[in-house]
Image (cartoon, rainbow, N blue to C red):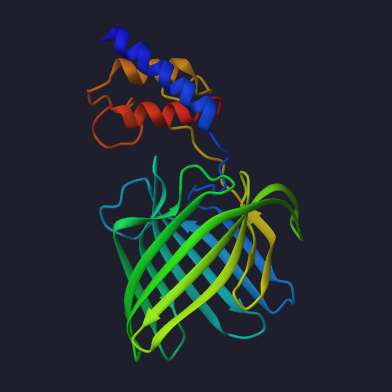
Length: 268
């Protein structure tokens, strides 16, 4: 068992050195990003909040995007229930406000859809599928194909951000009356998150200010201030058990998921 544990630790360390990537969507509760349209007419505020869902684990977040028409009382809110784990950011539910006529579209994803994969890099492609019943329209199916198409430096009112990922979002909406397609773009800055968004109507939003909460270090299991081989060894020593400190993802068992999470956060 000791030999197997040492081998596993070695493999994890190699894996981290070759596949680790920047965090393009910091997911701490309390993170806030404010983007305004270039014409000054609209503002979009992104916030990550603790979910209201009963029974949600510590890995769940509510991403709320509020879009306002400045100088008016017009406001729409889109709410996403997401889960953060080794598979990336996964989408469980979406509630999208469609205005006073059509009301709110509610979508549930089972199994959950990939919102963002764990590794974001040039050429990465993933798809999100969902459907909802909408007042006066009926059943609507929505599919979005997301692709990282470029790496760019982006200048915004909040500053200039280097090596941002440009993500193209091709969306197809299908209803009884027919189908429509649209294309939008989003830019994510490493360790910052969303800094720019271009809608399918060519409205460009840019980051004006943001607040990022300093993350805790749940993977520093020996509490020495750094995540390193000592933490990985501690978790490995409790492999298969229920030690609460070694069970970093809180699923009740110390297993490969805990080892992987510690390894992926080496050096933090």
